[in-house]
Length: 190
Image (cartoon, rainbow, N blue to C red; front, side):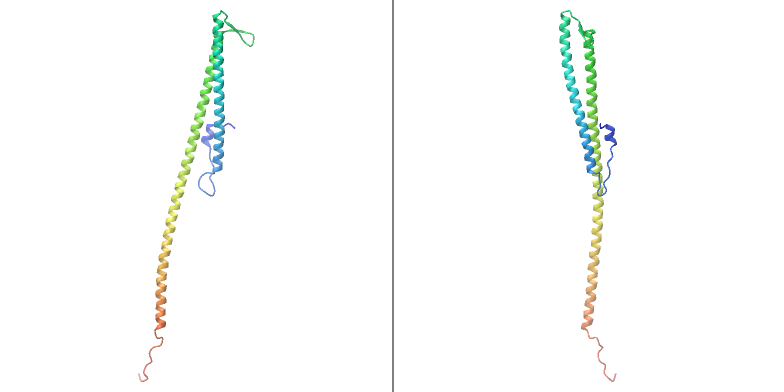
């Protein structure tokens, strides 16, 4: 499948269920597609460059043979169809072919550069979104931690107060056990 710039720009990833961010496998698979497409474009660019070099060599060869043929007074060059074409027309056709080829190479390079730029931009957006979500999650956890710490401190205060109250109550009970529980005996005549 040929990967287009629109595919890269419009690609959306599924959110994960158990953690913040995107599904790492899905992102990796998409980046693998981008790499395959980039390699294909680069290979096509190399192939076109080789064809350009071969065409330039052929043009130079034809110009040399066309120049030597015209210097001896032989202008026509036979074509594959048996027609006769002079060297100037052949040179014009070859120059036209060369310009067309150069345009295709430029377009290929431009498309490659656009794909690379769009891939980098998409990757930067994904990283930025992940960093933002990570920062937000850290902030939420920090707030939860502070809330839990506050509750723990309240429970410790309650425990201290409860222990002090319980200790006072037990001391009071011990004192009441140590003191005579019956009132002093009254004289009989009173």
